[in-house]
Image (cartoon, rainbow, N blue to C red; front, side, top):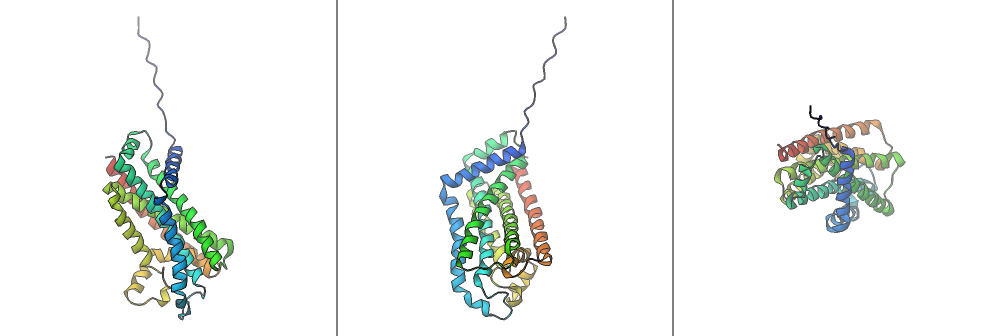
Length: 267
């Protein structure tokens, strides 16, 4: 008499998209429970719009400056700064999960590792879009002009999404390696160096000295051109494609950095 063949146990498949969305939702719930992780990242860009528009209004009279409306110059920059802060906040949330041990449970689950990274990126983008709406609203109420219309706002939104995803993956790459909240200052330094060593403050034509050289080779300047073009004039492909190329390069580099960091957590 032969023994009955064992019935194979069906393996449970995990939907990576569902995992990413659930993790993103958990991250966003944390914004409501811990407002201190999000509110400062929202207040700072608004503060920059208000303070810079009053403090630096005179620089628009410099020959070669591209607009006479200082809010049209600084609103896109402050919005991109808010987008980068969204990525920073998401990285902080991941660092907190690593410190509390919750992330170890995620690593022991059947969830694909790529989904764990993607969930943080989705959360960072959502934070950035929320900041985009509020900062843009403040700028428009204050008097910022958008000659490029909806295409100009769309260009800014595209830059916001790209910067947010880049900042999130940069932050994750550091957090996966350091595994504590101590990664925060390094994440911030990287973001501020990329932003302020570019055309964030003034057009390349009026920048002098070593900063002109650095800003001319910093890809962030092309991203700022993409974001600002609709606030300075009409949207043009000649301004759009360099910004898109710069974002693609940032995403490729920081994406590889984040994935290699994740690999260190799960050798």
